[in-house]
Length: 107
Image 1 (spheres, helix red, strand yellow):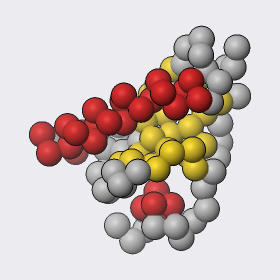
Image 2: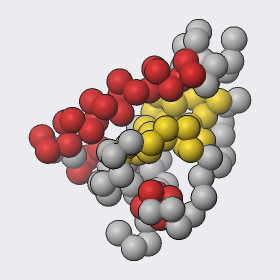
Image 3: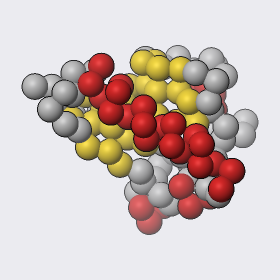
């Protein structure tokens, strides 16, 4: 995707405040946080939304969801956190690259 902002972040064309990166996943702070701690996990491979996922995405989805609590703790959310996946325009999705929001308040 040449016009996807998250693909541009993955490619290093747009800066981001990264907190985690491996071959499959990138996590970075949201530029419009709704809580004191608010970051997103994205697959490096472009997938429009959760509605566009199939069996071939199971591994990266599992990786993203198991990373969420580890990264949340590292960001100071030991007492708990919320996650959200907006899917499609009707679900409030604004950037059409799958992403998991993780947010909360430090203890």
